[in-house]
Structure formats: C-alpha cells, structure tokens
Length: 354
Image 1 (cartoon, helix red, strand yellow):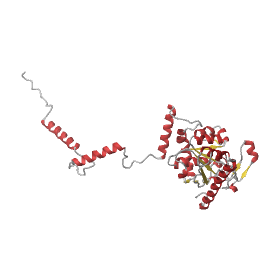
Image 2 (cartoon, rainbow, N blue to C red):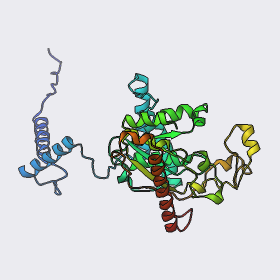
Image 3 (cartoon, one colour):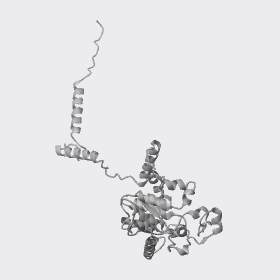
Image 4 (cartoon, helix red, strand yellow):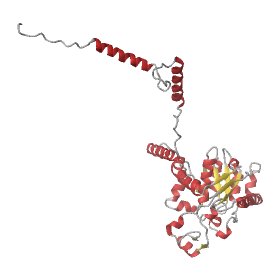
C-alpha cells in the first residue's frame, strides 16, 4: 500500500550469535578435559594418565571411606552424644537386652561409664598395670582391697577393666546390701551389672563365665581410720574362695593405691551412725564442716595393679568344703595384695602427684 513502510524484520539467529554459541560449547568441552587440581597453567591440557590417576584416587576414597586431609576421628564428646542417641533410639524401639541380674550393657556404656571416666582419667588419673593377668574370656574372680569411706575403688576398678582390657570386658561387682536398698543407687547399680555380695550370687556369676570382683574387707576396710591406711583388715570367712573353687575360676589379686586418701577419716561418730542406720559416720578434714563441698573426693593419684592369677582348676571337688584349703587360699590372696600395696607405696613420691 502506498505511503506505508515495510515492516522491519529482526533476525532471531544471527551469524554472530551462532559463532558465540559455538565458542562457548568449545570452551565447555575444553574445560571438561581438564582437572583444576592437576593444571598449574590453565592453558595446558591434562594427559590421559593424569585423568586416570585422579579417577582412581576418587574411586579409592569412595570405596574405602577415607577421610579427607584435615579431617579427624570423632572426639570423645561426639562419641558420647552418639552413644546416648543410640541408647535413646533403641530404648524407644525396645531393642535392648537385660540379663537375670538386671544388667543393661547399653545403659552402662552410654550413661554410667562416661560419667565415671571423668574421675578415672582427669580426677584420680588412674594408672593400670597387670591387665594381661585377667582372662580374655570365661570366669575370673578379682579380689581387691577396699578403702576410701565411699566405694569409689570398685567403680574405678570397673572402668579400668572395661577400658584397658583388650576385650573390653564388663566387671561385675559384688556390693553391700545397703547399696541396693537405696532408692536411686540400687536400680542404677543393678543396671550397671552389679549384685549383692553373697556366695550364691558370686557362684551364679562365675558359672555364667562372668568376670567378677569382690572386696572381702567389706565395711571394715571401707570405713577404717586414716591412720590405718593400707593395712588390710580381716578377709571374712573365705566365701569368695569357695565360689572360685566350685567353679574352677582363677583368683586374681588386685591392689589399689590412692583410694585411702580421697576421704581421710579422722573420726567415726558411732552415735550418729546408729541414728542414720549407717555402718559408720565419718569425720574428715572437709566433712561435715565444708558442707556439700566436703563430699567431693580429694584428687589423689591412683594405681591399680592386677597380680598373677591363682589357679583353682587343679583342686578336687571337695576342696570348696575343706576349711583348711579355703583358709590357706584366703591367706595367700590377702598376703599377695598386702605385699603389692607395700611395693607400690615405696615407688610413690606423693599421694597427689604419684
């Protein structure tokens, strides 16, 4: 039509745009043939051998689950959190086991042992020797001295066995009846694997192949005065020896240095002990004058030494009922522990520094 101008057509694909797209495609192809970790000069091309080496390295890391440089293994806090999370998860699903004594290994590993490790590693700084004398499997009876006003020695002994034994065995403590009569401590002690100090329970544990610990001094050792430290008290009637003889379990003497100083008992108020139904009422330099702070144990340096096992497999079946045999073995165990205590004390320079 006259007077009208032609419509202007704008090309969608010009030659210049096609050329630019071709250049970008060529650059992407070139970049795909390079590995930035191998090339110092961006203008150079990686060889086939370099690319193959990189691919092989990546495959090796994926297959073996290797950690990247700078990565570290999970620290103790991360392990604790993981153990607690696993404990809660399995508790909710009911995926856990408890034995006839009430021992809950998951509860012990996730909650009890991590708490005790603070005292074991940082507070008492416990050294352990002779762990190779404990059996790798099967029954064994650990017999140890007892002291310290409160039974921290048994708790530290359980950590020493679990953490230092190559098989990380659980040590089943034979504790006083009073422990299991306490509202909170009783159930916790059961879940941690411990039971009452009786010949019947000791026999059941040893028959089941458990590593068991007994403290023959009882309250006489636990509540003795500081002036009598490291002097073993009477070992009772030798019931632990009879249990070992009946089950053919080896007896492992154990000497603990350091527990005597955590609560130095300078007096025992027997009247208050009777009022509160306790075997003794201790007076220490900090308790009861310092109030609740006096309940914190002093940070003495500990050493736990396991002695050479005393085998019982060669004794006949009637030996467990023979008073002379049980007396001789009881005296042998007591004397071994006492002499080892003296040896460890001669090597110690200071009760707090070791």
